[in-house]
Amino acid sequence: MRLRENDVILQTVSKVAVFIILTFGVYLFLAGHHNPGGGFIGGLTLSSAFVLLYLAFDVETVNAGIPMDYKMVAATGVLISVFSGMGALLFGSAFLSQTFAYFDLPIFGKTELATVVLFESGIALGVVGVVVTIMISISEDV
Image 1 (cartoon, rainbow, N blue to C red):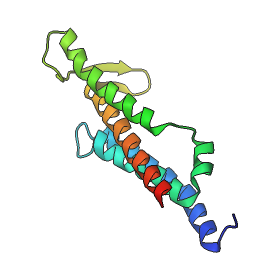
Image 2 (image 1 turned 90 degrees about the horizontal axis):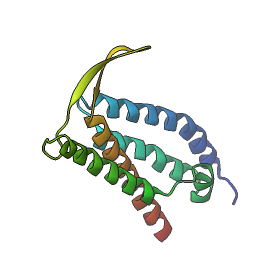
Image 3 (image 1 turned 135 degrees about the horizontal axis):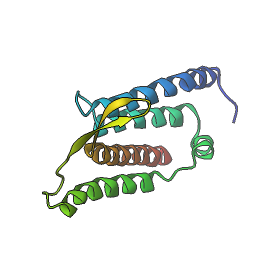
Image 4 (image 1 turned 30 degrees about the vertical axis):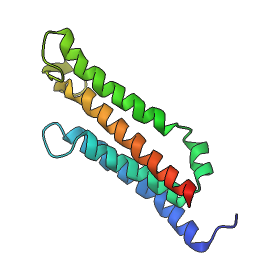
């Protein structure tokens, strides 16, 4: 397949934009504990980076560089979310009860670690898996 001039520009800009989008998606994911954001919006932002890659390059090229089954990513995310909710049952709390504690980490100092991060990471993985799977399915029909 011969590249058009617009494809070269799109691919060049996408390489930088994907890095920026991924960084912003991770920020939204991590900021969601105390500020607006979290697993869902972080997952949507992360999946937009993957969708941009699929738009700029063809499906075979992206799949060769990122050999990932996005259906398994979605299933893994759902399992992580469910198991994080069931973890509370082991301690006699209600399903999806969350807790947090402060730890003194070597580089970061006093840091709050919360179990909600496990739940939110499952949500993010589920969203990324579903959105990218839908986009790939739509592109196969066109």
